[in-house]
Length: 142
Image (cartoon, rainbow, N blue to C red):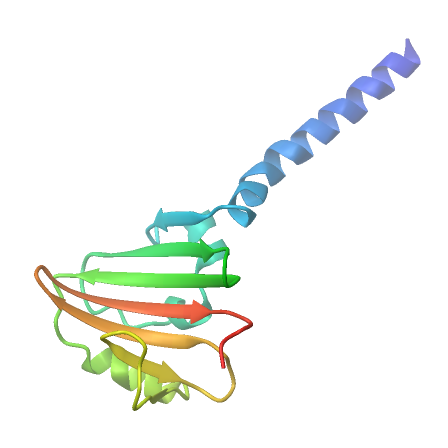
C-alpha cells in the first residue's frame, strides 16, 4: 500500500511538471506563431528585446514568429495597423546602434548593427496603411 501511494505521488508530480512544461515545449518546436502583447506567455517567449522596446506607433499592433527550417532562420515581426510614420522607429533603431544599409535584399529599409548578425527590415505598406518591422536571425547571415 505504501509503495502504491509513493508511486501515485510520483506520477502526479511528473504529470504536473509535464502539464506545466507542455506549452513551452510546444512553443519551442512551433513553425510559426501569431500573438499580441496580451498573450503574455508567447510574448515573453518569442519576442526579442528589440521588438519589446520598439515604440508603439499605432493603437493596434500584433506580433508574428516564423521558424524557417531550410536556412535555420527565425523571423520575428511586429505589425502596426493604420500607421504610416516611421520616424520614431528609425530614431529608436539608430539609438539602439543600428545603421541603415545602402543595400537590401527586399524592397524595404534594412538596418544592421556590428554587435549582431540580425537584419532588421522596416517595411511601409500603403494598402492598407501599415508598418512592419522584421528581425531576420540566422547563423548564416553575413
